[in-house]
Length: 323
Image (cartoon, rainbow, N blue to C red; front, side, top):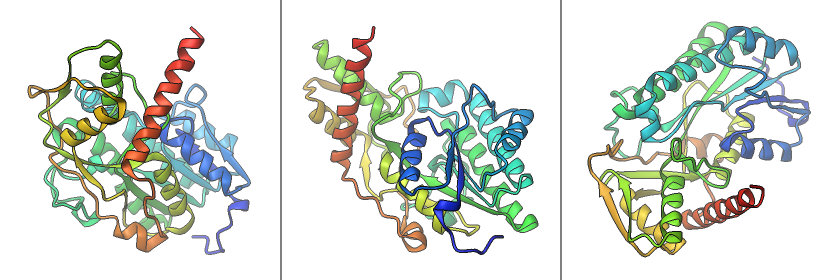
């Protein structure tokens, strides 16, 4: 491995998924660090599930010194249930090919970004990185979580055999400006915001939400997540995975009530218990990230929700103005 002191000004950083929800914020934060170059491969030019495309990508950018792999096929519970095969195949192929060809191309560092969905369904709270292999993931998103988890296995195998500097980060559920609000792919926060604003606009008496509201989740504001990933890219060089989270746990029921209050929806919240709850609880132990590279989340949850709602309202108005 390269043991020279790290300097951003010498780094040519490739960010897969750099135009996506998390990717845009990572790229913005990276540019504040003033690296030599930020490379953002577009899916229309490079299908990262195809070996030839990934090989061509590294041939076209031989100057790459770091890869931050954010590209993913992802979505909420409904999308995971409908497309488990797609979610498994796309994610395992992208991760496997990118790490292999980054190694072959002599890229000095690979930052793999996994998911909290890799944890076992019944993980003791707070989730410690050492718990990762103590059971099977929650069934509705297991194919996605396991595919992303294999990138950790590959990273550790490559470190062992090739002395290759690949790290693996485990971010919790993200939210914030730029999130996906499409009903087919949205995660819980954007889905609730959209439903409640639509119901308010249409003066509906109620909204119906997935499950029974009892599961808990931890959410991390996307700009905090981006900062954590960039900190790890600079400072972390070890084999063990690292949780990236806020350590703030909230029930889905309380989340719904909070969003209803913030958007001004005064109707009833109804729960469709025929739909799955997903994992019973999620809350991360974030001590390793703080100890290893000084990361702590900074955004208060309701402040982040307000920014997300404001962004969605502004984006909706923008789209209306051009149609």
